[in-house]
Image (tube, rainbow, N blue to C red; front, side, top):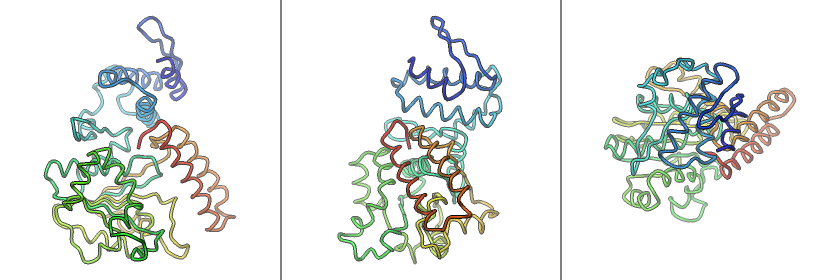
Length: 339
């Protein structure tokens, strides 16, 4: 417990003194009230499972974002003064009674957007929960019979979409590119259930190039790594959406692996579709990263360096920097943190 209290002190900028079964908190009013509410949440969470570094980190991320945003009602004495409807609509119940909650305002808005819109864009760095939350929403929609299948799509840039040259059947060809989506599915449904649903074609995996000529009705479609689509591919994908379907398009515009002469379809869509009614946009930043705390600092450091060197570096050098940042961010999966 002492270690967790020190985490709260360091991350929220408050001082906590233990007096028997009570805590004295000192610091800025907003930070103190946020820390008080955080400690109440942590105490309530102990009824579900023992606290560990990962769970404490997730709660800290949520309350840091609320404090940074000056969350409405944060200085009120009544913890129930926040918008109850927001908290209800930003949590998803999955198998065995497990509840997945949006951590921080952007994750909550992202969940609310997916629940309320047919076409959704989630844009931001790795580790902000875009893929995991999209998969959770897809599973929840399937379990409640709002859709009849889940379709997972990702551009296979590394193979130049010449998948015929790769060994194995289609599933084996695209599996490496869809591994993050499979990881989220396995965590949500379990390995055996996922395997059975894939066998029955209820969960379908497909490279983006194989989507041409199709119309997907009553489907929950997730396009991951959308920053690596071309303009034509993005337009093709968006026009595959049929009746009763929900589409989630995720990407990180700072990690584009396309040739320098090719414009990202995600960047283009941000300009072309921004004013279209019925399309929801959620933008994440480094404060939303819910992996190891160092990941957010790493992202900030690389973004600052890129900003300083943007004028003097060529495209290839910038790509090398982004690739290094991606590798370091991926290491956050191995430390305490969550998707």
